[in-house]
Image (cartoon, rainbow, N blue to C red):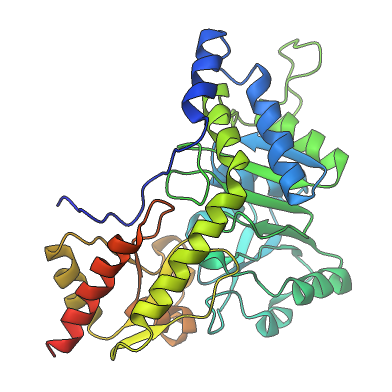
Length: 352
């Protein structure tokens, strides 16, 4: 089905084409050349963090972060029930075990439930800033300090939320707040972790490039062309975040009094505008007929076939997954677009 109002589309209104053309014309199209480093430095500086290490995806960033922290077989990592499955997969890729904690009413991990899941095998916490809502990082960091745990922030959906953990991992997929088409980046203040992240992403080559590889590593490098796009996006990040705040405010105003729609708590940065909706599947069909694309909430990790646990029907994460959806959300969304979308929602509920 073709949608006139897709749930997401990249907004490439800066110097993306100029920078990509420069990379191509200069012959630097692989992971070499200046653009990868320029992007890493620009994004790290914007976030007030010392080091950025770009890579091939947000999932790759999480995997690199866990490996750089020494997470491996026999270890446990605390992961939210309500997240995209890549959060859990990254733990599994290292040979460690994800241990899931249910969400609160803001969809983020319920920090009051974390401590009871900590065991002697727990090595790290992985809070996820869901849909752009910042987790209670003060509480997370207090627990990390108390139990001597590392913290990997899954910030895939939260460009603009400043990192405080050991490593923060961002996605640059095409539907994210800023994009490279595909890609990811890790941020850290620790120079040794940054060096290890860069070492692991590039097949653990020795400095003399002797083809003697002393550890299992990855080809998770970002290309210069991706970095060129990402750099141009970082240059506009303040503008992008401001535009998205306006989009959030317009949705709040347009949907706040619609019977059948429950607004979710405000977002620190807007990735996707999420709501809870009565008769959700009927609403989705109604919107699709009018060219408006929607997406469902994440399913609980304990409902995923690879992590199946019979506890899943009792979880908050399941309750939210049953009636939650998000509406078209991208930087190029206009006031007229939103009026059309919210009008279609109002039409559905007014028709009974």
